Length: 430
Image 1 (spheres, helix red, strand yellow):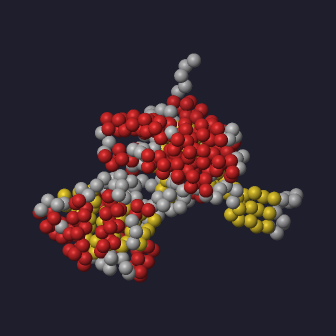
Image 2 (image 1 turned 45 degrees about the vertical axis):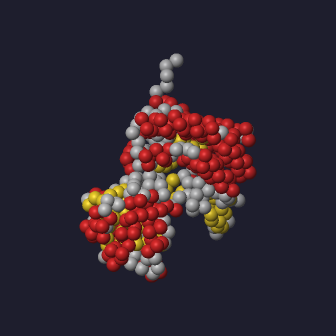
Image 3 (image 1 turned 30 degrees about the vertical axis):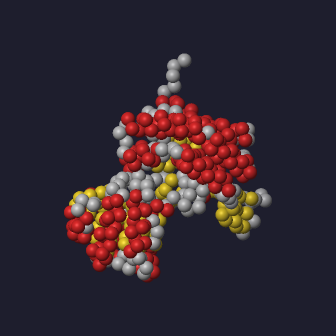
């Protein structure tokens, strides 16, 4: 027998997912929750096997020459495996998003209409590096009644495969009604599989890419099915002239350095000119201790000149392209601005609509910032690092959307449902 073509393989895989999605609609909330608990437990029980698979992927990542920040996103240590399991438990504890009555009305002719939440169907997740996405995405899709097709990068193939395999096996042992094909990992790293899969409009209902801008744009450009996305995370922290400076330093350090390789990390810091000379030396020293390279304007260079001279801080003059850059690394753009309005204008011009924060004690200025900044998450006196499904109480996260139609910001269970109208009649005709 001749081997199947790639197009035929993807057609067959998506067909199995569609059949599984139809079976998932029959599972009760209790059945889904018990399966999720079993999935969580098997991840904890099989940490050694997951670690062995992850070690192979880390070797691949190093051979590929990936940056340290990207390799960090790939690592599955004991804490991250426990976090995956905890995310699944939290999803199990959340209310079932399927079957909720959003609206109900009776028409003059006696026809009763109910608007009820339903699963979307088959959801394709395309992502890079972070294998924890496998558990998060599969768990959220399953709880919301959707079948999942997971396509990670080749640098995480072994990790993704074992996580999905363990979850499916645990769910089937817990409940034989769980369809085996509800969670599938695309078995090939061939990039041609992506357009082949995303051309299947009869089988696939939605695609959600997670990763760098290049990946997301490539997916959006080739897909024939709807795509929910964010292209990049150019996140800002703006330190207003009435900021608590100690708080400002702590938030800026956290937003940039806690995990620089993620989309909600700060990429540009804006500082009011009236406090730049006072704040930047202490903030610059703290950034230097974290090995952050500064790409700043001339005003920030002047304020940091002593640190630069004593080589306590690495500094380069910013180019215009730096204001639009998502570094995903220990690099930070700094710009000194004259006032609140200039900060807002800069963010709306150069930001990506992801996450932006103002640090100030002035409630009126904070309200103006939060109203006028065009982003999916806007903060007052907090780090941008909180833009995350788990931190928002969603249990886990399927992704972050900067789209304005449909889902926006961190996406959890509710964003993985659609709805349909149930129409109850007694013989009405039109």
